[in-house]
Image (cartoon, rainbow, N blue to C red):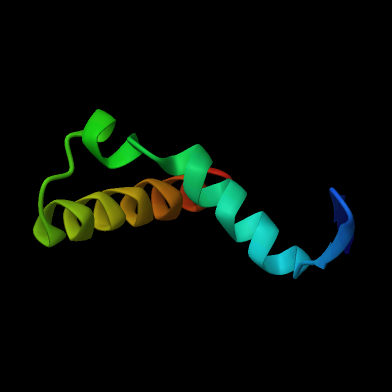
Length: 60
């Protein structure tokens, strides 16, 4: 991808642009969810996995 800036053309990596957008969109989410430590994140992941497993079991 290219973008004109004044009198020059800047070449950008589209994957990096998407990553930057995702990072900006996610800014503040850990704080909003009350995640303060790695342990908090691990516990959240475990909880989500339990929920997914439960949903799969209920849908059989």
